Amino acid sequence: MLLAIDVGNTNIVFAVFDGETIRCQWRTVTQPTRTADEYAVLLKSLMELNELSFADFDGAIIATVVPAALFDLRQLCKLYFKLDPLVIGDPAVKLGLNILTKRPEAVGADRLVNAVAAHALYGGPAIVVDFGTATTFDIVAANGDYEGGIISPGINLSAEALHKAAAALPRVAVARTLSVIGKDTVPAMQSGLYWGYIGLIEGIVNRTKAEYGEAMTVIATGGLGRVFYRQTAAIDHYDPDLTIRGLVQLYARNKAE
Image (cartoon, rainbow, N blue to C red; front, top):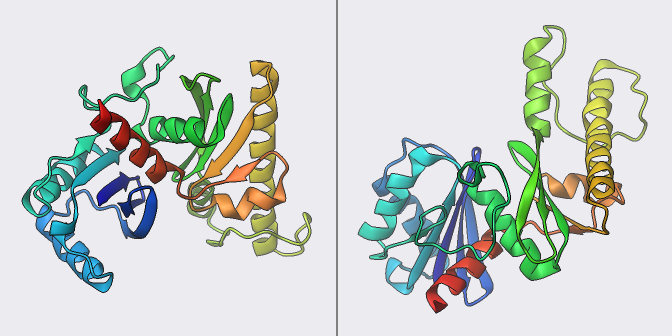
């Protein structure tokens, strides 16, 4: 079995794959100071609930946008799983795509993994919209190459910034409002956040398609993607497991070479 680890700015996802089937997955808060031993204690308990042990795994792969977390996750794999993990970004790990940006080394590992998964599962050209701490829009060419993208503040980040910067505005949950016009402060804020974000999604997708000049498939991922998927025609597919499926694709591709 394969352990796929996706480290985001907010959460870490640990996913267990049996072939291409997700057997189970767990999410924990990203804490760069957490040690390999602490990860092991957490995972041992979760694996036992699913009748798994460290010895059941024969592969591991890591993608992280938090460099400080990488050392202890490598140690986790080496000390407890007895595995040398593949790490996205290592020169030896082949992505199978060209990164057509001014500074390829600056593109986040998660964005490249999403590009690999989107092309393998949905074809191209495509736009991948990942709703995380930041919301990213990434462009995947017809041949699978990564062509650049757009980075905007995530909706939770926007909501928190609004609360912190304006003394009279409370902290609110992101939620769809029945009407655009709010009749009180909280629904007015929720409307601005939700429908404003719908406008951002549609505006960026439509402008990207116009600039690109070809029909493009739009795939959304990330936990908050489900909040917007059915509220706009700009998104064609919602795949919450896109990143970890991309990790499986890359593990298989590199082991085959």
